[in-house]
Length: 499
Image 1 (cartoon, rainbow, N blue to C red):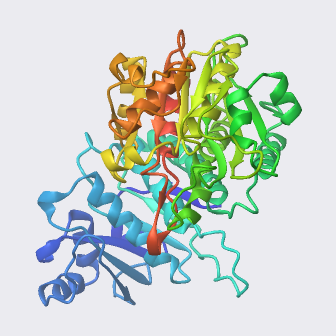
Image 2: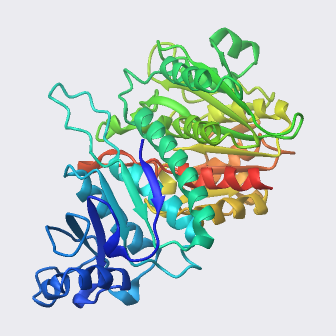
């Protein structure tokens, strides 16, 4: 496990295998790097003047055996232009540094990077973000390749600063929170990256059970099989799983860290472990990426991991409806009408709009917990990717204060989200001639009409919907889970626990 510490004083006197020093474009040295350079006889400044290190944002250069230092190595990290120094360039520098360190056998490093002003990055966030970025940079995809696995990074100890004595407590708190979020991030990415023939609904249920076994005092788990799901009259959920031989599961995780009887936060995660589109079959290109369609479910399990790691004094419930969406002789057909657990009927015009169907029954199930807030997380619509790209998760809600709380948490955690409107006009597009509603409403405003569909099952609840279709994973050469939005949700839960 990574050990994090703070430092203050003279950077050149720090005891570590490597000093990580920032350099601005044009050869300008931040104060911390000037200390190191002075002790090293001006070697870094001379190198920068010669143009041997451009110091573009994220550039790195490892120097060895500089005189005058206790550390045997110095890793120079480009921090771009001084005028552009902010959270994003700073995060890029930290990530680049950890990646470079991981390629060596360096076991300990002291970070002496220039940091943004305290209003942007206080001591708590300096520590927490460093811990989160370190976990992300050191993550290794859980691939199933038959060759020898690369050696794990030797890096085991990071010193971060400068942090004055007055900020030490806040920084230590930040390290603790960031390390827990890092564990959650690894959990999420491991689950999402697995192929669908491994990560089935039963596998997700097993992961939830293992999590509860690690935290038996505060975490309980129940798994509903298909018979139990039928008893709950979850007709929308059952309609999606009809074409698959893999049995569905409905996972209930309860963290009881708050006062007995206090209203919990309920998180609901879409768990389609593979989505072919059903009878409304998807185009073949990139269909392999539909193994990521359970990223909402993985996020919920990861969030309960963070909550349990931190033993947050908060009641949190995680609900995961999980199944496959497959074509077949028993599969639901366009035009079929099903009855949801709420009693409302749905005309299924497109079987590829399946996520909203399983979520609708899960959202109704959430009512029994009398929640303070309900948040569903889902790779729900390609329309949200068109609207927001891969930069922001979409947020829709029937409660603007809850939506703004999520957006604010995303901003602070550098895991951004953007609120989309959710007015009654969009719900009117879901009218059906034959049922209470249709499950799709055409292309226009597709991400929002999907949210409007879910809204029909949340009356009387404080509810928000997060569409993570654009942010949950990357395509192409970098294909894999991003771990989003675990940082945002962790910040939301940490704040709620402090209320």
